[in-house]
Amino acid sequence: MKKGFNLSIIGTGYVGLTTGVGFAYAGHRVICMDIDKEKVAKINAGETPVYEPGLLEGLRDAKKKNLIEATDDLEYAITNSDITFITVPTPEKKDGSCDLSFVEQVSKDIGRILREKEGYHVVAVKSTVIPETTERVVIPNLEEYSGKIPGEDFGVCVNPEFLREGSALRDFLKPDRIVIGELNTRSGDILEMLHRDFGAPILRTSLKVAEMIKYASNSFLATKISFANEIGNICKRLGIDVYEVMKGLGLDKRISPHFLRAGLGFGGSCFPKDVNALIHKAETLGYEPRLLKEVMKINQRQPYRIIDLLRKRLGSIKGREIAVLGLAFKPDTDDIREAVSIKVVSELLKSGAEVRAYDPKAVFNFRKLFPNITYCESARDALKGSDACLVLTEWPEFRELTDEDFSSMRERIIIEGGKALNPNRVKGFEGICW
Ligand SMILES: NC(=O)c1ccc[n+]([C@@H]2O[C@H](COP(=O)([O-])OP(=O)(O)OC[C@H]3O[C@@H](n4cnc5c(N)ncnc54)[C@H](O)[C@@H]3O)[C@@H](O)[C@H]2O)c1
Image 1 (cartoon, rainbow, N blue to C red):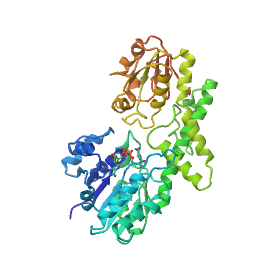
Image 2 (cartoon, protein in one colour):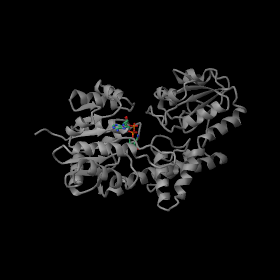
Image 3 (tube, helix red, strand yellow):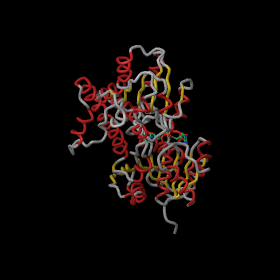
Image 4 (tube, helix red, strand yellow):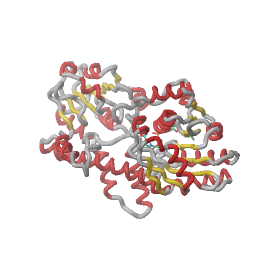
């Protein structure tokens, strides 16, 4: 008997491809399905459509072992697998709610294919979906389009993903916990078997508890960041370095040092949209989530604090050349979704500044939004002749910059969001929270 499960992953973005490569690494056979033919072709050619440390090597290794393939044919993916993970997007709608249209469409299409398929197939929702979605949207669609009985003829689970971009594959392979929301014991048993070698605690719950664990986790982490920023904004006025303060807090085991880094606030494709979706859901239930609303308000204002400080130091921004170091929403990713750099660069341009930007990975994506700013080959290049420098992303390579790199600036005004620069190498810069 062949070892491992036959899996299909529907939607091969940051989460889907990481899930596919991760399960292949664990010895399972994986079919990655995406409607984006370019992504499919890239994966089959041994290239990754997104940047994540280790992902390219993992994909190539899995291909060599014949454990992974990509297709744009959903029927092929479903009929040749026993467990299907849904990893399509769940973006934010204009009213803040979670757009479930991708999940809805995919569950109908999977249902249609399951009608003809034999054997017990488990559908696991890995996309982040607002509580009750699996019960109210996914299962009814699977049931209607397959003509089969949920639980009895096919299984359904919610298996939220907690990976962080920038360390996605590592997080996937070494999770703190695995949450399995299950429609019935048989579905949960199958997913538990699939995850048994991961060495992480497995928590089995109902479908909507699993959905809520994901939203509660992201909302808590976002709250921690806004809390750190609030304390940081007070510290700045007191001439205190908030990083020293947070070190003192983080040593308390009840608090933990993670997600206490004050700076420009959280961006990315998850925290903003997930907190907003939970706020929206709470309001539809007749509850006003005041804490979460304040978390978002603090976060919305935070990126502009670097512009406030720049104005204070530089005076008028109009016609000045500003070097922007870091565009990705965090280090080690090319993702710019909801990145603070978008707000900062927009504000600089609105104020009439010339922007000279550098990022090691995210220029390709950023250029699609801002085709008319100057993109530089290196940080050193961006600094040449600039009137001020704003460091927005804590890329490790910025820690290597020295005073000499900054010596080509016309005026030496250096401001960072978090703590990107090394004070032993660079003198005379400040942060927005220290
Ligand atoms: N990015 C993260 O860090 C992260 C972490 C945990 C959970 N999540 C959740 O995972 C889900 C996916 O996020 P992502 O960042 O990987 O998104 P993504 O945009 O990077 O990838 C989604 C992929 O789905 C594909 N797709 C869209 N419709 C499809 C369809 N009908 N059939 C097949 N493929 C389709 C798209 O082409 C795209 O490649 C979201 O719900 C997100 O909230 C994301």
